[in-house]
Length: 261
Image 1: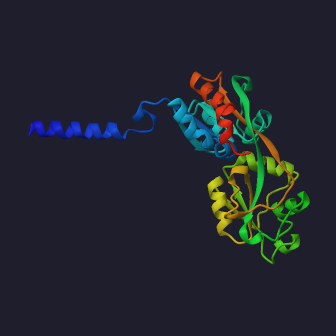
Image 2 (image 1 turned 180 degrees about the vertical axis):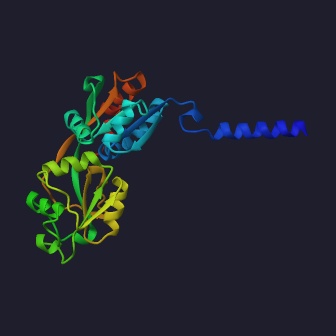
Image 3 (image 1 turned 90 degrees about the horizontal axis):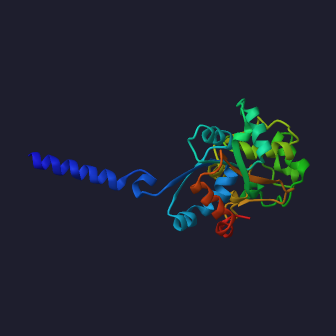
């Protein structure tokens, strides 16, 4: 009986070790990255597999919005925070979120790419070929409530708002909405980029704004609109560690051929 117990315990331990959790299971070094939709969707998900193959390290990616990503890198929960914002705009966002950054110089940042915010609309709105800034402002503030007002079908406008994509929504509000308030009468909230695409695809009359990587010509329609470009910034608390520096070097070099443009 004792031998049976020993065998069972040994078997259970072996199974636990073989299953493991994340990088610990393979012995690979882990790099934890938190960030908004632009860096996660456009850059880190694109380089994840080739970087892991080239380096033997494991990337663990969390889409959580730039404000939460900053808080997490500040307290050491992630190695890298990333946002579709300049460093200055990121610090401004943290102020808006009532999070005081005692010494911004403690954080080392670099621009690792660029992104364009894309208008994403339901496929049934293909008749809407282009939208001006004024038309977009009317749609997202709620002044314009029916697609027929901008050359589309007689269909109510449904604005889809991603609550975790704070960098995207901040810049869109500044550049397109002239800091106007988001519509309240025809708004549907979702969490992040994947939810945004899904909700727009399944909701007639729906429209939203997301990173370039969210564009899906098979299930969504993207009319021509004024370009809203932005830097994609990554930061660390203090100088990047050796493993993080390897990730940055890969993104700047070999990783460029995998990144959405």
